[in-house]
Structures are given as structure tokens and as C-alpha cells.
Image (cartoon, rainbow, N blue to C red; front, side, top):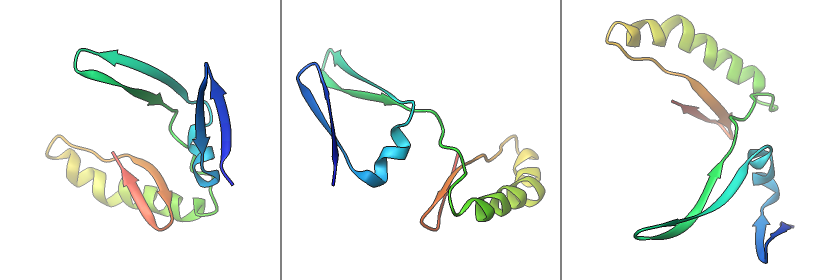
Length: 90
């Protein structure tokens, strides 16, 4: 069941599987020249999920095998998250 957070008359519905992504987040309503929208800024999620051991292994592969090759071309890769078998890189 979604949780409901109310802010200044606006109800925000948060799915249970998304709640951990919003810990420490700020949500702001932004008006722009060509419209308005919501801006969500959240800290990077910690890799302390049940898949944490897999995330640690992915990080090891990045550090030892991928990043050195990318660095020779001025690039790099950073592990952002690992969830449901999907690796998120930056």
C-alpha cells in the first residue's frame, strides 16, 4: 500500500518499493518560463541491500578491469546502485 505525504495541500503517493530512494530527499515545485514541474534531489543510495555482496563484486571488477581501460581514454565509471539484477553506473 502506498504511503501518502501531504505538503501544502499536495498529496504525494509513495510506493513502498520506492520509499528507500527518497530517504533524505528534497522535493520542490519549480516554475519555469515554459511550464512547471517537480524537482527531486536525493542522496545516492547506499549499497547495503541484500545484493550488497554482488555490488561489491561489481565494484571490484570496475576498479580492477574496467576503470583502468576507460582511464586511458580520459573516462571512468562509478557504481551508483545494484537493484533487481541491474547495475546502475555513472
